[in-house]
Image (cartoon, rainbow, N blue to C red):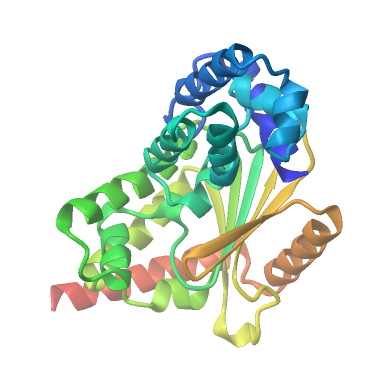
Length: 296
C-alpha cells in the first residue's frame, strides 16, 4: 500500500507543480532515465511488461511504473532485471547511483519526499530538536555527537542536507506544522550553551512569525504516551501516514489502524503538554538561561 501511495503522491506533485523536484531538489529525471532504458532494453528483448514482471517476481503494473519513472525499484529487483535482460549489472549500478545521490539517509529518503507533499505535519520529539527546526550549529553538534570520527566533509554534507529540510517552512502557511517537544529536548545541552541559545531563539522566532506551533511536554507529565520520535502527515489527495524513528532506522506506517493508534498516542501527549503560551514562555526562559551561562 505504501509504495502505491508514494506513486500516487509523486504523480500528484508533478501535476500540482511541474517544476517541483521529487525530494527537496533531487531531480526525478534520474529515475526517468532508468525507466526509459528499461523500456528500450525490454522491448529489444521482445518482452512485454507482464512477461518481464513475471520473470523478476513483480507485476507488469510495477514494470510500467518503473518505466514511467513514478516508482523506483528495490535493489534486488534491479539485480533480477539485469539477470533477465543480460545487461551486465547496468540497472543495479544506475539504481545504486540514484539512491546514493540523495542527500538523505536511505531510510529517510521517502519521508523527505513526502514532507514536501504534506498538507499538515505533526511531530513528537523525545530527544533532539526536529530536523526541520535545527540550526546549522545544532545539527553539526548532533552529527558530531553520533559520529565523532566522521571526516569534516561528511559532517558538512549532512548538515547541508539537514538544513535543506527547513525549506518546507519557506512557504508562509503550507504545510501546517506542529511539534510536541519533550522537555529534555530544550534542557539537553547539545553543542554547548551558545548553540542551545541560538537554537531555542530560532524556534521562538518561528513561533512569533506564526509559522509553527510548539508545545513542551514537561517532566512533570510523567511517562509520555509516545515512546519514540513520531511524525504524522496528512495529504490533500491520500490517506494519512505515520513515521516512527529509532536509532539509525525509521519506518513509514500506512496501515489505517496503526496510523489511528499513532494519532491517538500523539493526542494524549499533546493533551498533557503545556499550552502553546506556557511552552513559548518556558522555551524563552531556558534560552535566557543559556544566554546567561554563555556570557559568564
